[in-house]
Length: 158
Image (cartoon, rainbow, N blue to C red):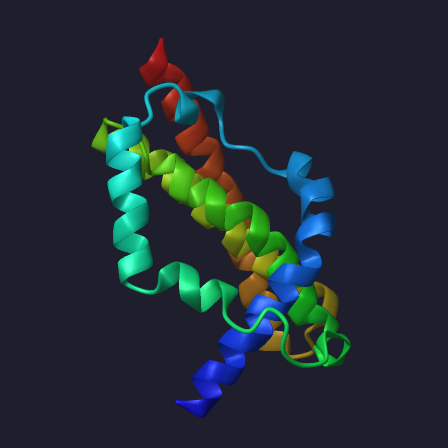
């Protein structure tokens, strides 16, 4: 339990420090426009936010934002957290569609981008040949799947 608390405290700290940097990088990844055309109503989104808060999801990400020495975190952790600040909200927003198929595609595009981001970080910092090979495969496969889903969204919305 202490390890989990420490981990979430570190994540919260990195997120708090990385917010200004991530805000500058948000232009790097955006969901296709079809992912914002038919969002759930304000009431449905509010209910979703309440549900997430009740289950501690927001608390876990914010926990310990003022604790610890953030400079002690490895560079790869800081990079992953910065990128996650962009893809996690995009995934959540993408899934807020009335149509289940569109919600799936939109959420998965952001999810796949997060996998690509993580793979790129391990390619920059990792040393294990098997993990580097896996990361390369992930980048290739997930990029191809993002392209497929983006084209599907374009076709579906026309």
